[in-house]
Image (cartoon, each protein chain N blue to C red):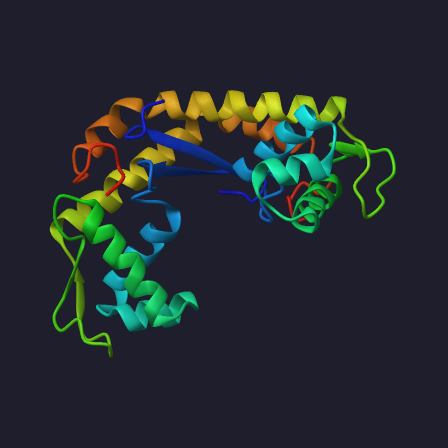
Length: 119
Length: 119
């Protein structure tokens, strides 16, 4: 998506049970099979990543991330079936919402000084 | 919008020239006719509010907020015609995007432990 197009971000729930940052974290955990590895890739502390995972796991009917040890070192972590479902649904909503306003957004972008939006 | 429905947030531009926080700030400035008054209402420092305004003004083809003094005390501030247009377009995109995924979002909400999303 061009940078002068909108990035539609969806926050679910009053306490924002899920948002783009948490989805990115789930994807990184899925790649690394590790919370600490995902945290490193995302440039956040292990503690912050763990707190985000804990908040997601508390928000949904079952855990989105299952850790093999949960020790402070991190240990192995897997995105659960629900976690994968949540990511898929989230991305589908994000894409659909973005497409729904693609025209308005390209018009809007003309109001930006720098078409790339980097102003 | 019920809290277990999605809040669709749109970020325009690579540098997120505009997002929900900045739109809320524009609305507060319009109510208070003052950056400092808006900052107080939003519980942010005057400095932070001023920096957000400055970043918005730099991002668009003309200023969204016009200050009468710009002094460190804040002084008077008005949302410009472009500022009002930007807010209107933003809110229309947000509403349209949210409506486009309303069904998916209410299905998604069933995966939340607390339907209010406050988990």
